[in-house]
Length: 349
Image 1 (tube, rainbow, N blue to C red):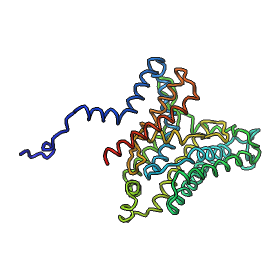
Image 2 (image 1 turned 180 degrees about the vertical axis):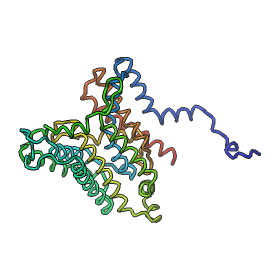
Image 3 (image 1 turned 45 degrees about the vertical axis):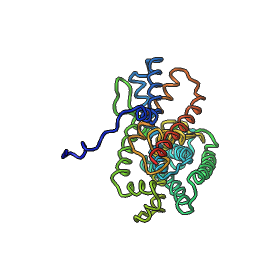
């Protein structure tokens, strides 16, 4: 008898059924890679350094929202308020960091606040709305879809009211201070003559931070335990209400950082800033393997999901596909990814 227990386990044969399951389980990745190859053939500029850096920058801009939504999905939920929280925090951040003396300055009497103060204000706003969502989900056992749908409408109303305050009168919030623009869209160095914007490094830091929280903290372990089996987690001593509130509050903080970034990246913010960002985030998460079944997900999968979506949508624009069709494609990707995810769950069950 072999001393190596691993050798004692017979390997499954690579029969047609196993190959078919492997292909079907990874069908979305395969189809998207085929699409990427097709786009690169149709337009060789797609794989040039300038294009690739643009894709990385776009990925970094959308990544924090996906990292936030992912935690909600791990708890078998979702968050439909993400995009509106991004919009509100973007407009608040931009309004507080407009250049002094600008003709359209929203709050002329308070000057330009320090960047760390505005970041803190944005995070408090986002985390507060996230905690609000988590409280109603945990305390009243309401489905996250309903709770966050209600919060989405509340936040959008506040956003509509905010952009009409001060001297703004509903106009786009622009005329940003150079310190704000340089902090977000400035660049420390370039590759092949193309600058890498600073918000890419912010996204890298947030990704590393979320990886640490998910994998190295008690909170992260409790989150996955709660998503996998709430009753078992409760019996094991997990504070279900507090963990749920913290997951949604952390998600809200991630949306607010995205809003702070978008305030400078968009540079002309309106009530439509952040519109439908939650769709991109949800699609990226399910593509990256974050399961609606609960308790399943990896940070690297989220990064891959966001990157693949950006590759596809930027590539579609480069080969002249109508931009309006992107909503159809996003919807199809979400449905297909969720169907594959549920199939894997049913097979295991």
